[in-house]
Amino acid sequence: MIETVWLDNPPVNAVNSGIIETLWNAFENLDGGVNAVVLRGKGERAFSAGADITGFVGGAAEGDRPAGIQPVADLIESAPVPVVAAIHGYCLGGGLEIALACDFRVATRDAQLGFPEVNLGLLPGGGGTQRAPRLISRGRAAWLIMSGERIPAETAESWGLVEFVVDDLEAGIARYVEPLDRQSPHAIRQIKSLLRDTRDDRHDEREVQAFAACLNSEDGQEGVAAFLEKRQANWTGR
Image (cartoon, rainbow, N blue to C red; front, side):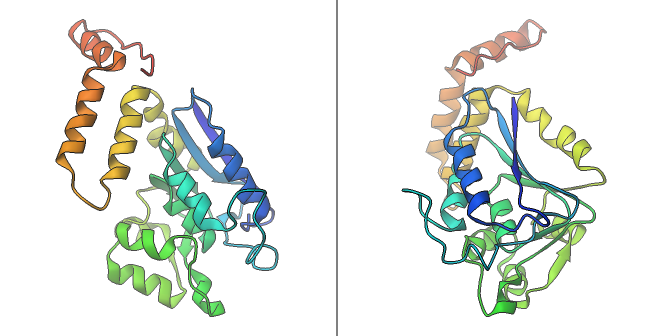
């Protein structure tokens, strides 16, 4: 099952406490049957044009949850299943920081990405200065953050900030996200955990452990049997 989580704050889905709460609720309460999550922006204009400066910056936490974009971006990044940002229109500032916390990004050709915080005498404070250099070159990340300029989706793709540029977002989700829903849920979760744990440091032993966990799982046994018997695998997620 693919779950869609909507950023919904018209007209451009500025990240406010409501969107932050939506993300916390969605990722703290993921159903066990969810195999992938798609983050999308409501409306025609934007995935998210950034933080709501008037109502969000310096805002209080919701209950026991920490305030701000960085903690919820960390929560998205730590999700046990793949999370995909499906981007159209503006994807700026805090909106881009949320997108960077995802495993990969699909964007329409009209999308524009950037960090405009420097234009206000600020800097990205939701993980942007940490995640962007890990996806694109340090120099390009520095220029994007220091200039405050926007780049089009095709430039973002060539830099590695966006993985796939599409003409239609629904078709893009069908092409790049739906295949994840057909794979072994156990294997996908092992892969997600392995990639996260070894993002900054190579760890061959961790890979061997993950491979063994898959090989000895019900899904691993079923996948091998289905291949040998030339039939479709019936995954259990275990």
